Image 1 (cartoon, one colour):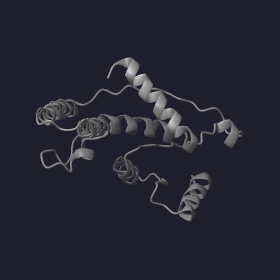
Image 2 (cartoon, rainbow, N blue to C red):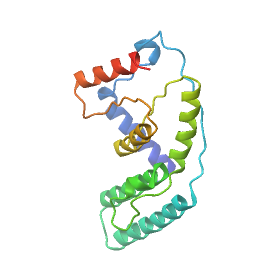
Image 3 (cartoon, rainbow, N blue to C red):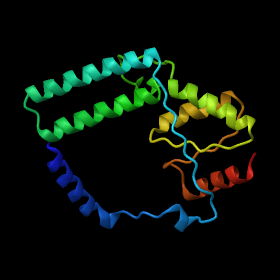
Image 4 (cartoon, helix red, strand yellow):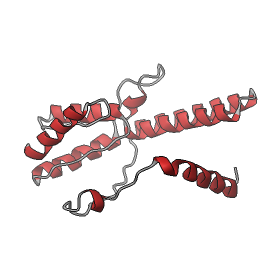
Length: 177
């Protein structure tokens, strides 16, 4: 698609989805909260992650070329491309997220997890709390295991919890150490 076509499709999707989206600002929902502090931290992949990333990228390109050569529909190609991009994002987070694939290692070093350990140590030393967000619940499992290994109390919210469970976790977070 050209840039102009992509813009047209994006605008069309935005118009169609607008009635179903509710966006509220933090100021409207909880004005008592302080402004969010945001710090961008660039993390280089470990050599193992970079190697796995390159291999998965090449394998994904081959699969997409094979699909295109076989005459696959555009929707199939898009889905395959998005799946490949998802796997590459998972490798960047932690290679164990793609360990369910038979050709992938079951454990590897994660640069992001190492960076998290450093940030965590600083936060704990300074008496701060952290909120960790991830689209990948398996990554939250890995972070939870890391926190347990260090004996650090933690709470978790995810989409599988009932409203009562969520509220209990929020209360525990707000009142706990």
